Image (cartoon, rainbow, N blue to C red; front, top):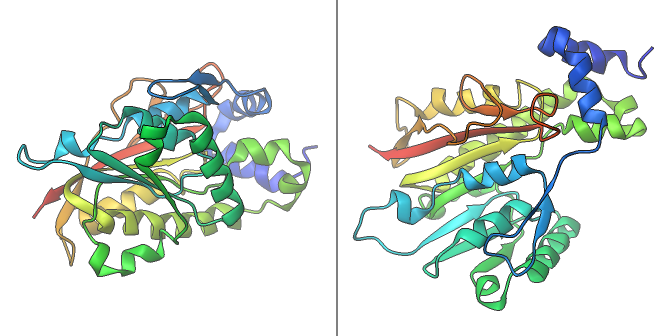
Length: 273
């Protein structure tokens, strides 16, 4: 008998006959790569995370030709792998705000940036510690960023399965609670995005509530009526072939991706009204 039958039943209902093989792959050591493009020294992370960060379109790819420079937000940046992928690709005219609410995780983030970026790149990256969900309430910051990556806090079932204590405490309320937080973060990220800008929403969750469920809410709220924003949202496919297509994005699962993931990615573009 499994130590948490509610956990097993929840994911069995989602993945049906695939759940056992998926579960086994989640318990195996994760696949990772030493990513080094544009870095002073490589950083090891899951290649699914690399693909999520590479999906972000930079401001020079989305702005009008006469516009230069731009600021990118990594809204929940710790431990830093995706920020490093972004920073490694940035030209001299771009800046990255790598944000992390937790003080302890923010210190880890800053240490990773210090260790893996050269001095010039490091000067282009600022570390901050604000609540990215609350930032949407500050109208003066609406439209500030040319691109936003939101790798949202999530159920992270791979870690839950590896931690007997976390597994024993898991209930179906967990993904419901996290989906509410993720929605607050994603809706704020959209408000912070410039018209024409690129928004990537990513999680390492298996739960549909936390993936397409949250992405769909963004399209439902801002897809047809701009409300008080300066634009409306539309889907912009993530741009990589790995993994499996979902209604709003792609999901990379370790049982069919050589141990990569889980990693869900949905990409959006904010079109002017």
